[in-house]
Length: 122
Length: 287
Image (cartoon, rainbow over all chains, first blue to last red):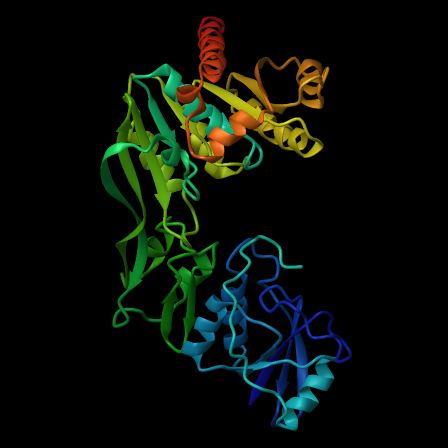
């Protein structure tokens, strides 16, 4: 099964990105082989609807789970239809979160924000 | 004659100026294009309200006809469509109603449906026709409402005052499109100057005749920074509105100051005269 994580940089020591839709990279990890790869998030610079497009990219990469600090309502709608599970990331690096997932320590994300829609989110 | 009142930021006095100009003009039209938070009607309290819904077209998918080719998803610049597990998801709130997805659909799986995004309320207050655009909460763009507001009144012969949304984005451009003259309202602060510069750039691009009203002028102040800017750039200063608690009190109680006090009636009457002269002058020099 494949898992996606938004990343600030394309290394396992990178922090999980605070934004889902506008993360520069996604790490796609395969639990079966315990290997993964970084892909560029083509939605990061979209003027609008970045969350929807990013969710489409995750689904197209056959990920069945997402680990993220937060996620907007629109992206969540896409994941709901695609039956992608969304877990809340823990503080730490991409590798830390993979370890937490493997140990079954991550909770499902249950709050989805209404989006920032170009108003800045930092 | 159509006069648009605009400013680079909210709270500068657009509504104060446009409401009072319409009130002193009498037999006039006031159009509130600030559809995200229209407040002119709170001052006018118009009677005989008529309501009219504003709709836009959004795509609707027939899942039996959709072959999952994704031409629509790839086309949409606003990312209003997503395709997962042979299902097409349409995000109405993000859709800009361009209709492109429908044109690109090879199997005619996409068609249009009407979606209500707001309404137009029309009423009368002491001879002033008050027309308000109101957008529903959560909608992406108020431009369709503004288009309808202005189209509805395009043949209006009475003097028309357009209360614009704040800023200088597309929604403001749409509001000033048909205006014969733009009144830029500014307050004498550093922030106010920055915001004036933005709308000044805008009216120059649109080649609209314009002048500035300086609101919240402190007593005893010699030449404030807005006056200096206007003088340096040879922009006509139409009027200076004093920063007075009496005015603030009337205004914050949703009263029209020119209907309550002869002093403010004179102030806005003289502003109206100045603007009218300016428009006539512009018409002569630009024709």
